[in-house]
Structures are given as C-alpha cells and as structure tokens.
Image (cartoon, rainbow, N blue to C red; front, side, top):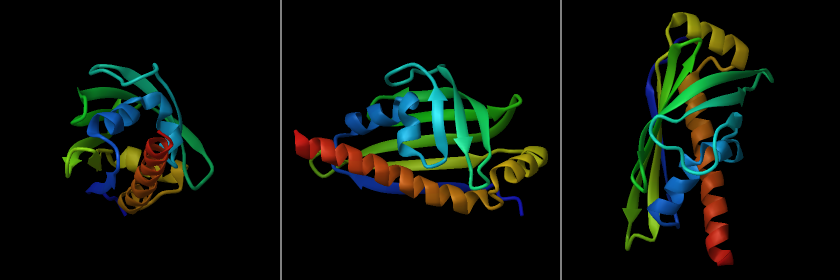
Length: 160
C-alpha cells in the first residue's frame, strides 16, 4: 500500500539548540545517527544552504541504494531541511526543527519526513528496501536516530 503521509518524531536532548543543530547539519556524520543511512558523501561540518551530497542507505532487505540530496534550509540552532531525489525525481523532504526547552540548555528536536515519491519510485523503493509501509518504518528509524543523537550529546555533556 502506498503511503505518502508526513511523519514527525520529537525528542528532548539535554544540549543547547546550536549544539544539536551542528550535529544534525553535519550530514557527513548522519550514518552515525540513522539506522538506515549508512554513509554520506559530503563536506565536514554543518552543510550550508545549496550544499549537495550523496546519501547511501540500507534497508531491511539488506540491499543498498543511493540518493542525491540538497540542503534547502540551514538556520543554526533553528532548522535544517534537505530534499532527496533519485534519478532526478523527488523522493522526500527531511526537516529538523530545534526549540530551546526550559532555560535553553535543552532542546526539543523534531524530525519530519514527507514522502514525495511517485508510483514508480514508491514501487521500486519498496522492492529494493524491503519497506512497504514507509511511514511506519520512518517513525521507527526516526525515534532511533534521535535516541542515538541524544545519547551521544548527553554523554559528551557529562564528560565535560
């Protein structure tokens, strides 16, 4: 069944918004947080608006695939958005929003994915990845991504 729903997951991380943003916007490190993205070919550090990078992913099928991505919004400590394409066709838009919590030493980060695939890409993507319900799969992997990010940043904070 084709699913084009927007999926969002949020988590609170005990780190300032700018610190959380810098980790998410450093797309070369995305494979460290995401259980589906295994690597990205990108520069080091937070990617600016217009930056393009290649993302390589691996799904439950064990097969991998690559996409081309372009950063659309890069506002330090506030928002980071990139668009994903395959064969020049839209796949998804990924958006991260950062909101200070309490006295500003914690951040609520909301990760949102909007599936934009046409029928052909939906079928091909599902067959290659082994993911037929992309919305449910994204929600699960987004929770894991934010948890990995939270664990890393909070451990670093404790270590001083």
